[in-house]
Length: 257
Image (cartoon, rainbow, N blue to C red):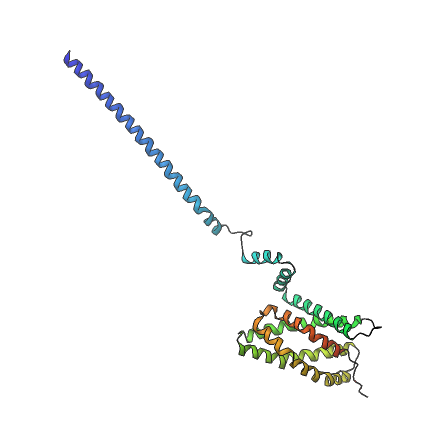
């Protein structure tokens, strides 16, 4: 009997030990599974955190950010100035030409207001001539001239600026002034001899007056203004000068008798 009871006790203890080991194994497996799930979630989170960067690099499309779109949006918010600069960037030649035309219209009207007698009326034909001159001659020539100077003399130091100013007074100024007087005289019906006589009479006084005005304007323009805005600043400076020019161009033709 004693041996049987001992065997039963040992058998019961072995069963309990096996049950305990089974429970312990199940607990360890459960813990391992939980740790594995936690690690998987952590790796997924890291992958998710990295995903937007890879997405931006690989799937950049038409709606992504770009400096040009930023410039366009900021320009659209800047009102008229932004609209003008945007057109100056996308259509430089026509924008500069229209700007010159409008400035010449304003200058001619101002000149007529100053010189108009009390009973007189505005000369719309003369104003139209000035508008066409600014649109078709002055605007395109300014665009080409300032771009040309910026290519051959790209620096902005004092010496280079003085060179540009001298070239403007020695080359561009005389040429464009001669074209201006010839253009207006021809459209007023003057003959070749009369145009030559007008140039002999009006060019030298105009050049002398220009030497007192344009070097200062040109130096400021070449020194401080970006190339794409130089024609606009030059045309703005020419507002006062054009009042004088339109007055000179409106003088009676020289008698060649």
